[in-house]
Amino acid sequence: MLDIKHIVIDRAEAGEKFTTLDGTELTLDGSELTIRDGSRAVALAGIVGGKNSGIQDDTTEIFIESAYFAPAAVRRTARKFGVETDSSYRFARGTNPEAVPLALERAAVLIQQVAGGSILNDSYDLYPHPLTRSAIEIRHQTIEDRLGYQVPPDDFKQWMQRLGCSIDPLPGDVLGWQILPPMFRWDLNVDMDLVEEYARLNGYQHIPETLPTAQTMPAEHDQLYILECKMRRLLQGEGCLQAVNYGFVSSTFQDHVLGQTERLRLCGLEVAEQPIKLVNPLNEELNVMRTSLVPWLVKNLQHNSRQGNPHGRLFELGFGHFSTLGANSGPNSGPNSGPNSGPNAEVLYAQQARLGFAYWGEAPDLWRKAAGAPIVFQLKATVENLLRAMGIKKWRWLQPAPGESKQIPEFLHPSQAAILEFEGKPCGFIGAIHPALAEELKVRESVALAEFNLERLLNGQPRLPKYLPITRMPAVDRDIALLMPKTLAAATVEAEIRKTGGELLREVRVFDVFEGGNLAPEQKSVAFRMLFQAQDTTLEDQKVNELRDKVVTAVSQKFGISLRQ
Image (cartoon, rainbow, N blue to C red):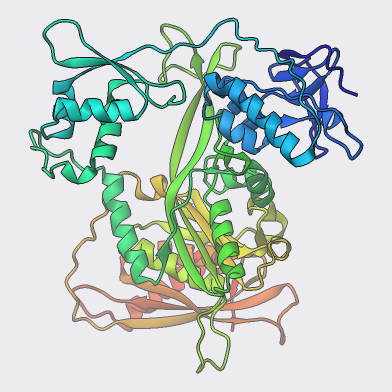
């Protein structure tokens, strides 16, 4: 029962429990402003009432309280608990403190008209320190300078008066005014606010259109930006659409999708142990900076799938955000000082350019009789075409052995994923989505995801392709079939073949994989086709055979494999 003899506006007690009208229990930390009776909180000030003071079917007496609350206090508490009500919406944006008595009387009259009863004449108004506003000084010349056209002084004064402002002339000979906005216009604080209001009321069509004079040379484009523009064009040619997502994401959804973020670091993507939290998030669904591009791309494909779009090819150029421990904070500290894990260490925030992909489903085709290549291989082909077109070399795919699948991110199928290695270092991943995650998201189409460290791939330098004239010399090919363990990736052997073959080896590709038959259960036969070609001479069979034998010897000694007879 509400003790109406004692109504207090005060801070909550630390650890105090409060149950809202809808039954949600909140734990207060002592910073929240509350409305209290003699011993407990009965409402979060300006946000929501408590269940302990709510109206029941047998309620016969109602105590009405009308108040003004500081917008910042209401906004901070509402966002902390994720409580969104009509009351918090209005108070968080500022209300008129002078209208409090009028609101009280109007509420009492409306209740009487709807529910009957009688109104007691006793009302109390506690307003010991009335809020005041300072007049805004504005000069007539300032208005004309900002709007770019002549403004009649009387016309400006008339519009300000119609807004409810009081106007006094500026002292001295300067044409201008001291304007005091009404209490309910909390958005009018500086002279530019008044210029904006006049432009709106007088009509934006009066503002002339003029191009600013360029007095300085344009700044040079960042090299990363130029390369990203080239990437966009290439990926659009591959049939991809660009996704543009927020830099923040829901921490709950991100943690659920990514799982152990340490696995991303093993793939060459920088991550933080804890995501960077926003001090003042827009809402609980956007409360941390994203660590990876994958969560938003997963949201994109999930939304499209639910809206009846069973096919999509998306890419995104964005940033992954992370924090590092910097130097001691102090007059001599800075981002270039050495790392320090002491109590005075400052946290430095950084970002890493990324390239992400999300492929799902197949394009409708009435003439398709058989299933095409798995979607993860379609994405792999797109990535390889992009790398070649950008002039990026010294890369290869690494597929961890079955016992080393912990290097693969948790949201990918462990047997249908690979790591991109560039210049000997991991630089991203590619793979099919894990079936368990696809089932949770209720995505029925096949899905492939990828994300790469763009800064490491581009390395800040443009890679211009080196011109080579088209040779007139014939090419010679040789095929070899190698017996190897099933756990040995063909890409690993292919990399050694390229290394041993030298400049005359123009192309290597796998054209056949055989298992079973008279082979041991743990073995497989992989056939490679090697293409040899010289720039200025015809290769003789003896030279080509020597190179083939050299390749076979090299891979046999390094991997312990043999040539299949």
